[in-house]
Image 1 (tube, rainbow, N blue to C red):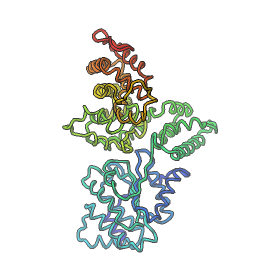
Image 2 (cartoon, helix red, strand yellow; image 1 turned 90 degrees about the horizontal axis):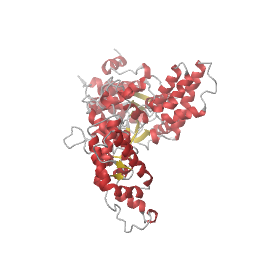
Image 3 (tube, helix red, strand yellow; image 1 turned 90 degrees about the vertical axis):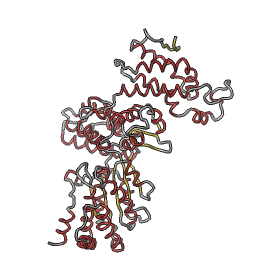
Image 4 (cartoon, helix red, strand yellow; image 1 turned 30 degrees about the vertical axis):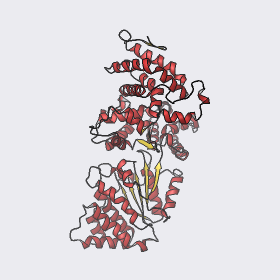
Length: 536
């Protein structure tokens, strides 16, 4: 038996799924990103590990294949591994890369073969030993000989690397060890922004790149989506000669791009739906009007799989409380804000903490800046989770009842105002000055009116209005009591805060909405009545 066959038999390398083979980015897309990465190939001053992170559906695997195509052109593709959910275990990774790097260079093959033959029984089920003996060892030994070819390795979909396996943490511990290898031996890792992966790379000298979505999406990504959609529509026109060569117009494509917000998966399923439709123009119009609320079966299955991968055993109540607050907030909350809004739902004895829950949510939310501002990465996630017709078709563990979530947010807002509002909250020395005349007013407001209190004062009525008008709940009585307390004891303080926030315009409208809410529930006969002037 020759060396190649021996290596094949002993290492049992994984093969790339045919459905993934060479699924590169479309020509003329991702040019800036790909150029940045290919420049890094030859820059030995840069770290030898690059981590490309992005939310599910942002096109990481397509980028990975485009990089492999370029590496093959340069004859520098030393090995790649594509993890797929529930299909691979951690110990397959280094065995496969060892086999592929042996094929890449005859000197490496000789070193890998000698390492395997040196041990009477080689513990290939040991992830750490396999990495040290079959990957790190040969690359260090042959550092000088490999410098002219500068091999590049790629691991795609790291977050899908058998997290239930006991070796998963070992893989995370090993990856930073690549930094000890020669600088010209490069490793590219793509993954979702998963908390344990973030922690593994925290403080490490690696090159980081992120695919942005939602409000943070950049011009270049939107331009790439334009290019992709125009390409797809050209294909559709080729297949259906009855369609005008000018269809769709620029305005229609622009609206689709805005809905996509960097989420290539959504663009793909939308284009597929239009291509499969009998009346393509009607389908396009419906998708533009519906935006991310549009139902695509394959897309919903994809979102369900994404959530399942992140939450295999976490309590659904904790998920709904956290994600409901994040998804239905009227402006992004900070982590500190979120903790206050959820303080009655995460007790010290709870099986899961808010920090744990948010770490699990990182594939679909972002936590940004020093204040840890929380945003949903794309509206498609929120629209799926709050749509009972879509979400509960598969499992209701993730379904967020909008009315219940708004009710809880209303109660939290009223309690926060009850606790935080007070006379002369900013400690102004004179009531005779106009707000615009107060020195350093904005700094003073930021210091004295916490962001959670400012949020509660501005948006409590929006959440009250979000409670279904036909639904009655025993907690409605809590809202009535909180409203009574608010209007009897904190009303003027609330008006003062709105004035300082330059939001006095919402006061009368808020009171009218509160009165309508009470009337709809037929509570007027047994409780004090609220009008635009307060209780009487």
